[in-house]
Length: 294
Image (cartoon, rainbow, N blue to C red; front, side, top):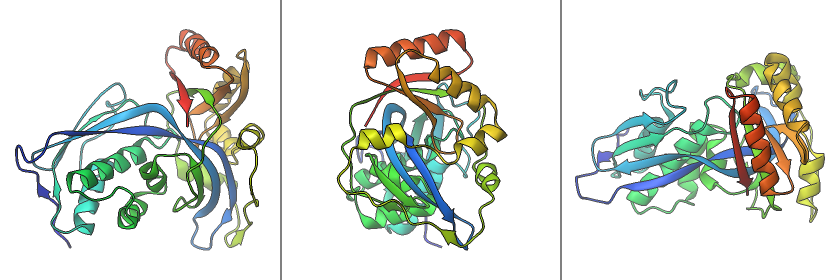
């Protein structure tokens, strides 16, 4: 096994910081289940301006976690930031690592790729620290070994994601989107949601053929094939969607990923901000954020 990356020596570099932005599955189609058990997806993905913050400073490899969503997240060896650092060191011989600090603002197990975004931010920080390009195919290969959502989070730009997450389309310019993200504080087990689909292995549909078309219309008229199964497992998701749909100006309400975070889209940023304030006042135990999506 390759050695872990060398520690960055004091004063070898200035501390570096990366944002780990929330990933939002604006649409999500399940095309089928492969013979190996994994599900084939076709998802239009955007990123919110809500994010964790990850820093890298000189010192031995380690991780400190703080922030409003830090309480239930451990800093042990299985944390995705540390796993990313070890995987980076094994893939790129002779590189250096350091001490990570994570401000955890995104809820855990929530369908917006919080852990994956943190791992991707760690890879970008290590690439910067070692003078490697962040768009390197080798770096994306490392990301793919860490988790299905890590490659798209490493890209960090709106695009179409296919396969189990490893096939990314070119960056897309989304129409202006003003959203409200809501999580009821209930974690969702991704495997449970996919299992509930009960799809036979080996039957895969082809994704829809799309040329030049209206992304706004696709978003507004699309859906999330995991939503019904997630609501059956966690009824609170249905309550979140109903609350979003009842708000003035809400164009659509939909779940992201396998849940439990849902989003509502609005025409204007002030309408979205007012909607977020209203939900926060009515449901103080929910995680609620008004955001732009791009």
